[in-house]
Length: 94
Image 1 (cartoon, helix red, strand yellow):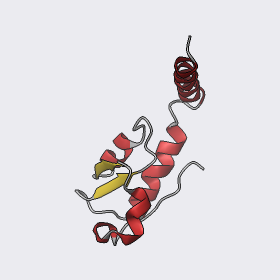
Image 2 (cartoon, one colour; image 1 turned 90 degrees about the vertical axis):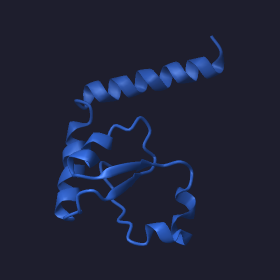
Image 3 (cartoon, one colour; image 1 turned 135 degrees about the vertical axis):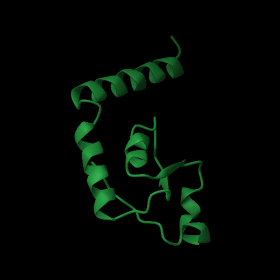
Image 4 (cartoon, one colour; image 1 turned 45 degrees about the vertical axis):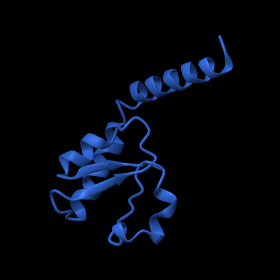
């Protein structure tokens, strides 16, 4: 097995085990939904999910009434990007 294949297999195993141990990160998803609701976000708004990995939290954003825009490598330019002037950054489950 090549080094790349081993790395991918390990990442998959690690992801599956973390989801099993944490009940698919249920508590983190609950915390995120509570924070979104406390911010009184407008339904139909867009959430930028950067560092989204497998998109585990996308359904939580949708439950809060938000559309999802996943990171496509433009996060580093956010401070200069006028499209994100009203961006609210949440830290969940750290």
